[in-house]
Image (tube, rainbow, N blue to C red; front, top):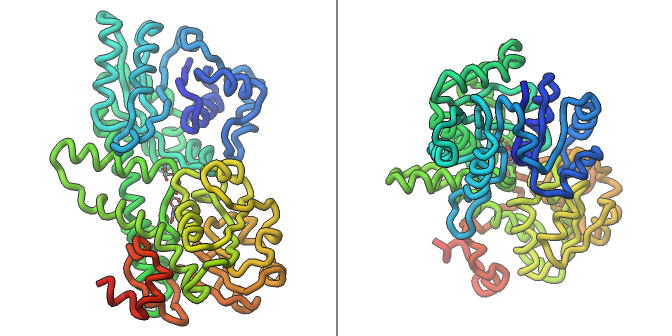
Length: 466
Ligand code: UDX
């Protein structure tokens, strides 16, 4: 089939490349001249393991090309995908759909035959209807279809997620779109991947609901991890015991410092906004968003507790900055509020990330960045593990301890076995494991107060918080 992809961001570039891998002729379009020039030379604008190899291979085979001309990409096209960004509107929380609407209008001018316009970007329910209206205004007599085909790929494992998904979701309103979309996804259907074909609005909502559910699942285990610390149990055992019930499932039960990234924070807020617009209360999602925000800030307390309640003048080494491993993405990364809070309390921050330091330098200030994790830990009073990169998991703890001033390890991802780290001589503070000396701080919002000074004034801050 002949496919055009409008927008060569994460979703557009990965989807276009994988469609080409199945033998389709794919043209990816972007307004960013520099990005297109880079891609033509086989240089990736994003960090994604395995992507460069696939792009180069399919470009060399003549199946994949890049252009800034939408009209050129649209020639003889069977399906054109809209894969532009839908960032949150500042101060609103809902998705900014202006890029979608502009793309729809521009597509309308070069639309031929019975082409299908499929929206791959994550968009609120009803966006497909709006796209259809925009195109119909430009081409009142045109025969075209609008479909929804949300993408569920994760950064860091995007290629595998695309080529071996749990399911494909397609939303259509007519037979033309149904046939075209099923033909495109035949390779997956033949490999027994379930293909869910429903109404366009259902497909749009499935994407938001799935992300909100996963965000809720993470938040649930994170809160249970807090309870584990107080009742002397291990959240790892809890997650295993729960997850083996297939109705619950093992995935997304890794407790940590709170979810981040380009999707969960944005999509949960956008879903809440849609619900609000329709007068519906999604209380669980509301609580998830609030609990996750509070959790990220609360992680600084773990560090304070681990070093005796005061970080003023101390050197804290943060290992792992991106919102998760195998990406250079810093969007809503838990490392950012952690660093900012520790700095407010007077800590000097040194930090290391295997891939994300360039992006990190744009969002955090006054942080000394180190390519070498051991150099990063030099003379530190504590090391905090925020992102569980494999290279960080593999660190030699004995060597790490040797270069530090005090052997405090705050492991927010349980990347190291507690026993192993203790055997290496560390005082360990982890997530959801029994706390040796119980913290007196219990409120998630305690950071609204100047914690250190507060503590000096009152020996029992938790009591005052209530
Ligand atoms: C997510 C969805 O998984 C994907 O389907 C959608 O298309 C885009 O959003 P992504 O944001 O790339 O993908 O990362 P994901 O692996 O889902 O992790 C999101 C956040 O949750 C990260 O901060 C991660 O560290 C956190 N997380 C994930 C946990 O804290 N615990 C877990 O068990 C899983």
